[in-house]
Length: 323
Image (cartoon, rainbow, N blue to C red; front, side, top):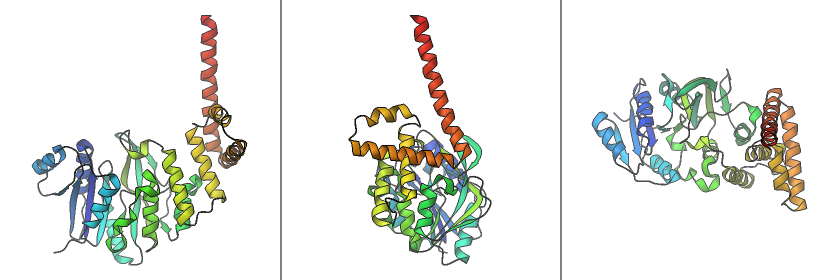
């Protein structure tokens, strides 16, 4: 009997994390035929040997240190089932995830993909926080502008992670994966390409765990990749450069780049031309306006500034006491 669904676990030299991820996948139950494939892109043979010893029934596709986007493309090219999930080796599934997502797509042929909310784990500790920040209603993404707002605007309520997405294979193409469009944030562009074929459905119920740790891409913020993503969205996906969404999103990049502290910004601006100083000042003003829209966010910024100034004052007192 042909398989209706396949889950491809993308892994590279993270056997301990893979052990947890694979365990959560193998414990899933579904009333349709499905299969598990581990796409091993490791430098060493340790992962493949471990799989052969402890999970001989799990199919393994072996590659050797492919770039991340090429690894994704190979997983898509080799998919044969009607529905496919490109799962990450550092995330885990909760009971009922596969059954819920695939069943929805089976009964809603217009949709190109379905995904679910996820609990956020820091290291090995699962937190009560979720990617959709406490949302209780399912969400349907029907337009590119809605998806872009979700990713660029903090106040829109968050996004679901890429890892537990179930795609209708006929609507997922390997050419949709291209890291030149946004570096580590190119998943946004990939999802926009799939969205052109049909809407997404996001379940508000958390059915997965999204892990943030030092070895993951989501742990470090890449300013240059974020700006590259903006250029792609401006050029090909209708994001206007002078729109409030675009300017406020760039102000977020500024805040993260300068750690929400004014001193580095002042120091940095002194080396810029007058035109660029004006642009920087404008971004700071936009940033201040956005902070006023949320008391909690404003408190977060004020707290960071106060802590920084207290630390500086403490250091000055210590220096003076020494002298």
